[in-house]
Each structure stands twice: as structure tokens, then as C-alpha cells.
Length: 66
Image (cartoon, rainbow, N blue to C red; front, top):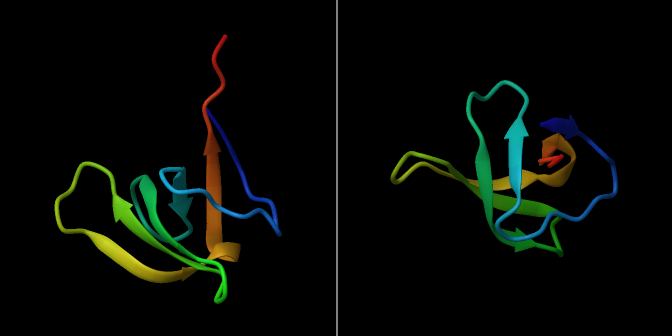
């Protein structure tokens, strides 16, 4: 698994990300293009949704298959 942050990258719905200072892996639920924020759901937990998270604090997870 390779984690990487890229400024200017636009998240996609369903994409897996992490947040600095937060444990766990999140899925992108909603993208707010006008505000450059997203709503995230903590994977494996019910009801755990973070709203209006700025894109620049996301670390994108790329799964590399061999």
C-alpha cells in the first residue's frame, strides 16, 4: 500500500484516504467542489461521518497490485 499526498488532486467518490491526526481509513462520500471539501465515512464503523474536510489534509491511499 502506498500513501501519497498531492496538492491539487481532486478526490473521487469512494476513494480511500487517511487524515493526519485521525486513526483509520476513510471513504469519500460527498465532494464539495466549490468549497474544496469532502464528507468522509470511517470504514468499518457505522455512523462515523466527518463533514467538510478540506482536500489538502487528505492522504490518498493507492493500492498497488503485483
